[in-house]
Length: 633
Image (cartoon, rainbow, N blue to C red):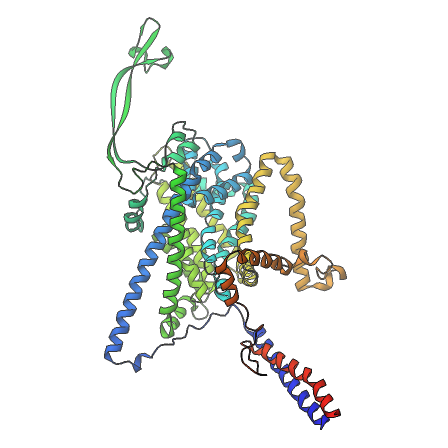
């Protein structure tokens, strides 16, 4: 009898272990980057009566109108967010640009472009400051080229922050964060290649100079497209005097004491020819208009006086608060509206993009042209991205809008990549048109800077898109997406390090001089290159490496794995949550179900099938000594 019981236990154990193995194999076989099926759980259209069909159409139209409303509020909140950052750090950005000795270092210029764009949250604003400095003769075009490259990097942080709002679901966060950071990696890799090339050859400056000298370009005006709609709301909340930051950067002493908040929207300037006192005869307008009265010298000059005609009509026009306080208020409110609108947009898209609708949209966005024209699809996506960015006049707005679509699985990473590249081109076309509105004497330099930005992005696309093997940003973004899906706190570390700590570190070394920059930076770069090469060889040709270097196991676990750091973060967050009763309740609710059985008596049911099977085997094996004792009795 005992042998029969043992054989039954062995059969059950082998069956349970095979079930566990099958579940693990299925989990490993599933590709986390496969786009999920957005299944329609509602009643099919054919099963609805007339009243139900009319009601569904009305609900769908209502959802679409709500979606447009939330998207409008989302774009406006991004505009207000940019204004808030300018109020908080705009004058500091102008001070940073004012030090020409630092800007003479290309690496420092690159970092300054990144930091200033992060401060004002607008590449258009930082680019306009650069154009103003070039137009006024305070900065040459050659020195402005690295700064323009830096603005390209700084503007890509917005959609990365937007992806953080989708951290609730692991799979959605993996796709959203990868879709956002593919833009970051493209900009960083382009700078790593093109900045040394520009320093060595100056090809961006030379090519754009040839273009400017070859074509006769007349003055024009930058068109207002989406701004016509969004300005109705944003200008009723806040209006800024954009000339203040440019004035600080160009060394205007009066600009430092001015407020960025625009008080008077309509002014009148009157020029009057009148006698004025000047220090000496050399300051007279002409010898015939210069006369003396004792120790005083008089001349006839045009004196311009500005008269305020009409006040602006935004909320903060009569508020007696400093720029910093207004900026912090707008920063908090805009972030609240932005996150709320993004969450509601994602929920609406999830409810709308189901069944046949999702299938049609996915096919339109992600299907390639038939062979042999499949390669054309990506370039059309680049043109679409450029056109949409030209319409919304902001690459941040466009890339932030497609990030939640990537997260819920409507747009693939492979399609989001060319759309992001197109947005880089679209934002430069707006800058080119804006530069064409410059005065005739500064038109050449202003337009050349805008063309440098355009040519930089075109060069980056040539480097990292035409061939599948060169699309390294996609692979890097997917790797980062996998890491952040397992360790979500790493996303915040990535943003803080790459957009704040690293630029500030390089900027600090630049302030110390070339000797310190090369002495500290060169060894770090060499170590980084060695680590990258070893990682590639470990994956592809481990036989080329010594036995000790075929893995990083010889290092402490914390030096080559995030698991120990994850435990530290978990302990810290647990202690923080214990301080709040709400956090304790949510922690209890979110406690994994595989730790506590559900059921009664001797039956234990687990939500996780694998855990249930393992527990069943464990219970039956633990039962074996008891059965043996009973048979002996």
